[in-house]
Image (cartoon, rainbow, N blue to C red; front, side):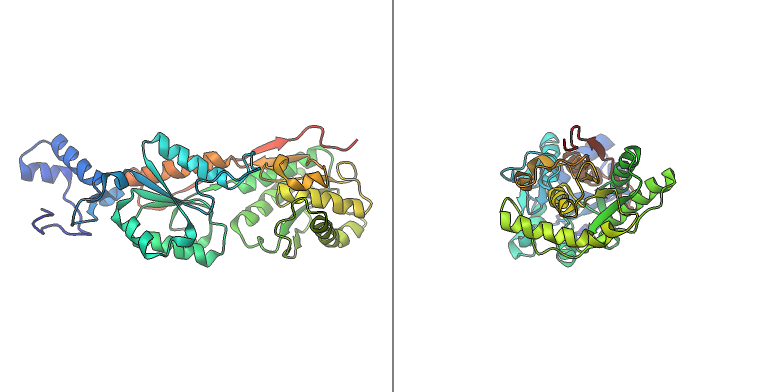
Length: 368
C-alpha cells in the first residue's frame, strides 16, 4: 500500500483488524508485519491515533530505529571530581543506563548543535526517540531545541518543567516536597525562623516556585510565620573553586546579602541555601556577622553534592541536611516515559511524572 502510493507520509494506517480482513490473514501476522515496519522506521505508533506512516520512502536504518538520542551538554560525560549523585550529569547517566537495559542504542548529542542541518537529517532519518536532560540554560534556546526535535516528528521526553513546555512529556523532581522536608527538619531542631534563599537568576523558575511552596507549607503546618524569601542579586562569580581571592569576594557578596536580615531583632536562625555549593560561602559570611554556623545559625543545602564542593577546602563547613533528588532515577524515568510513548501505551495528553526526593540528614555537621 505504501509502495503503490495508497498510503503516504503522514497517513494513518488501517487498523490491525481491517488489514487482516483485507489481506485474508490472521491478526498475529499483521501485527508482526507492522512491528517490522516500525523497527525499520517506516511506521510509528501514535497512541490512540494508531500507526502513522512517517517515511514512505526507503526503510530507515534498523540501528537508528533502536537508538535513543540523549540531548544534553553533559551527555555521556563523567566530570572529574563529581562523585556524588546531585550533579546534573547523573540524570544523563541514568537515562543512558535505562536505554541500555531496554536494548536500545544511545546517541549523545550536544544541544548547541541541535539546529544544524546534519542533526536535523539524523533525527529525520529515524532515531526511535529523544530525551532532553538539562533544560536549565537560556529558555529561548531550549524552546528552539524542542521545536527542532518536534518538527522532525521524533517522540521525546524532557527533564524539567515550565508553562511553555506543558504540552511535552516530562519528568521533574518534587522540589516542594524537598523544601518542605528541609524546613520541617529545621523546625524539629528548634529553629523557628528559617530563611529561604534564592538567586534572582532562578527566582522565576518552576523549581524555585515549588521550593517556596514547600517551605511555606512546612511553616504553616508548624504554626510558624514564614519569612519573606531572600532574593540575592545575580552573582558574577559563577565558579569559585578553591581560589582564595574569588572565595573571599563571594563571601563578602553573601555577607552583604544577609546584612539586613541578620540585623533585625528577630533575625533568622537557619538558612536554606539554594544548593550545597553555596553553603561554604554562607557559613563564612555568617562568621563575618559574628554568627557561628551550625550553632548560632543552622545551614542546610540542596542537591546532595556537598562532599564534592571544592570550596570546603577553604571553609570546611558541612550542612546539617540536604536533599537528594535521585537524579539517576529521574533519568531512568525519562527513558521509561519515552518508551511508553513510543509503544502507544500512553494517552494523547502530555504526561508529567514527579519523582520523590529524599531528605539526607548529615550527622556531626555542627561545629565543635
